[in-house]
Image 1: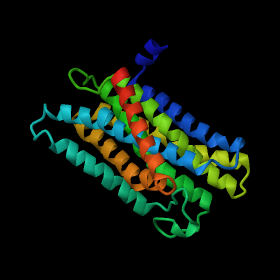
Image 2 (image 1 turned 30 degrees about the horizontal axis):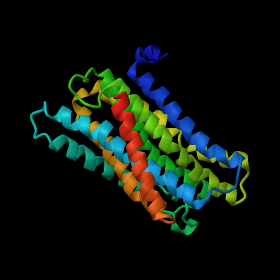
Image 3 (image 1 turned 180 degrees about the vertical axis):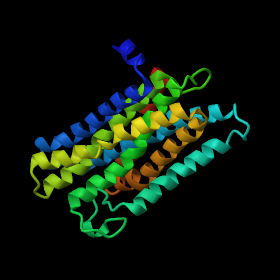
Image 4 (image 1 turned 60 degrees about the horizontal axis):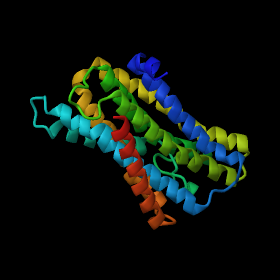
Length: 273
């Protein structure tokens, strides 16, 4: 099965990998079929874990290969990673400003972006969808890097590392699905509709992954920038949403869970990469 997967085109690999990450989002949203509420401490732990996974993935799977690839270029080694990293954060910030959205746990009056009459459910999905774009891009760029044949001597640019990244993203998608679906269920929405909106936020990942993989394959020189771009966008999500949300209730639990998430992702990358 692994051999068959390895023989697929990178764009297909990225698409299949992000179908898995979307499935994990759906699994998290599926908790609404069993309960109306998740204990706050458990949610803080899950969000902290997700933050740790994303921080580790940003370095081990994205920034480290970007730095190594930059050593072969004519610019100073630090230039492509820094430009790509900052561009990723700016891109997410611009999306935040352009698209109305509401972070989980916030009141409707605290919605960000342009004023809108969208319902709370749509605003919640919009927020998580925004932040799933860089995750899909990251997976796509990782598989695209392998397909571009730039693997020799570049730590992280291997099929195993790309798979590890997809697994890590999938793990941290679970609480994101829960964070969308559970508030809607608590407010009286049916289980089916709450689940639908919860899983909907992950649908964008396969699309973003295909775009990321194709971009790298057709424009290989942008690879260091693309890897760092995905890392910067993911770190923006961690700093802007996951850590503040996790610290609302139990900051100590969130901090320890972040450490665990970082360790799990680091282990996955080292073991599979």
